[in-house]
Image 1 (cartoon, helix red, strand yellow):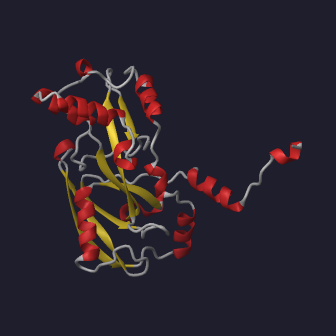
Image 2 (cartoon, one colour; image 1 turned 90 degrees about the vertical axis):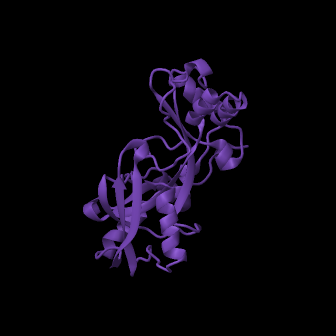
Length: 248
């Protein structure tokens, strides 16, 4: 093989993919009270305008959190957190069953949206839970309202009430109209968007164990190392997602 045969080619498609992966698209965090947002349509190849991920948020000794997508619920692969929860539940001890809750994966949905109160920030990534997702499907399926239509869609009015585990959300349709008055500006925002599928990536089993070790836990915490009390990762997926956390 000649030295020249070791080189490949750099295509326009590869450049575009790299640009998307380097995107600095920010996160839209729903504030307490009223939020008026406009959700973007699904990207080409998607059936709904959001992706659903299943994340573990596991506390390790020292108060740190290890965050990663669940291999079991995402790709039906081995997951150290799910295996830990299985072992705890198998003891039949009510205390162990309660402790297992912090190893459950919570569902999160991520879409592209514009915050009407901060439109200069452009299109952002918006995480939301099951309550809002059910309402969105109701609007489209039962009411026939295409809230994502760029020319004649609807804003969404999302009320956030309470804090922590008691946080609740209410979602209703708002004003109808175009997504933005300046479509040239909108087109520029769209050009910089990443692929939502990038947030569904799953780490290998050994890499997840390394994350625990790096965080100071020396591996998935043992029963004695469980913090007890409130859990940082529960099945109720209406808890806030950390907008700045590593999605993997």
